[in-house]
Length: 303
Image (cartoon, rainbow, N blue to C red; front, side):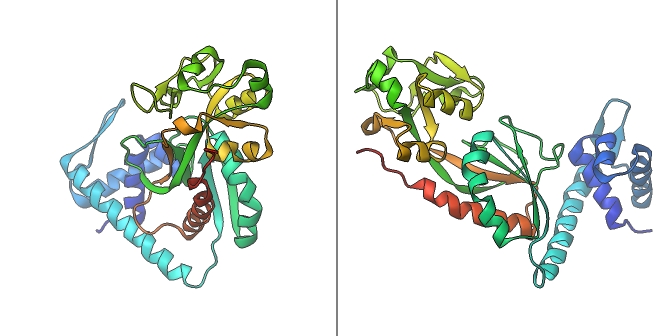
C-alpha cells in the first residue's frame, strides 16, 4: 500500500506542532486517530519515523528524511492546486493577521476600508500582540514583525522599513525646554521600553557611536502606551515614523535633534510558514500593505 496525502499532512502537522495532541487539535481529530494514522503510515513504509514515549517524540533518521520530502511534496501539491484555481478565482477566504498594537492601529487599520473594497471576498481577522507569537498555535497566516529578525524556521518577506524620530509634545518642551545636543537629554524625562532593550538604543550620533543608550524614567511594554505618554507631555520618546507621522504633521508632537539622527530604520517583515507559492489572499494583502508602507520609507524632518 502507498502513503496517502492525508497521512503525509498529519505526519508533517505532528512534527511542526511538536506533539500528537497539538496536531490533533489543529486537524480536528482525536489524538488516538492521529496516533493510528502515524502507525499506519509507518506500517506502509515498513520503518519507524518517530520514536515516541509518554514525554517526548524524536524523529529517526528515516523520519527526518521523510519529513523533509513530505513537506516539499505537500507544498508542491498546494502550489499546483492554487495556481490552477487562482486563474479563475478572486481572492477569498479567511485571512488571519497578527501585529503589534501600534503597527496594527497606525499602519493597517487606516487602510482596511480600501483593502476591503478591492478584495470584498477576503474575511479579515486582525489580532494584536506586542510579543512574538507561535503562528501555528495562534492559527495565524501572517505576522508582521518590526526590527531585525532572529534566526527562525519561518519564511519572511520584507515590507520596507521605518525611520525612528525623537519626539516630545509642545507642552512638555515649553515646560522643560528643548534639547539642543544629545547630551542635553540627560536632564530630561525619557520614555523607554521594558521588554526590548534594543528599543532603548536611540538612533543618535554622539562621541561613542550612533546608537545612544538611554535610562528611561518611565517604561512601558507597548509603543502605543509610550506614544500616549509623549502626547500627554510626560517626556521624550523615540518612536517609529508610522506611529508618529500624523502627530508630527498635526503639531501634536515635535521632532527633536534631527541633525543628530543617525538614520537607522527599523526593518518591517511579514513572516509565514510557506516557502512555495503563497495563497492568493495572502499574496494580495502583502502586495497591498507593502505599497502603503513605501510612504514610510521616506521621511525628512531635519528642518
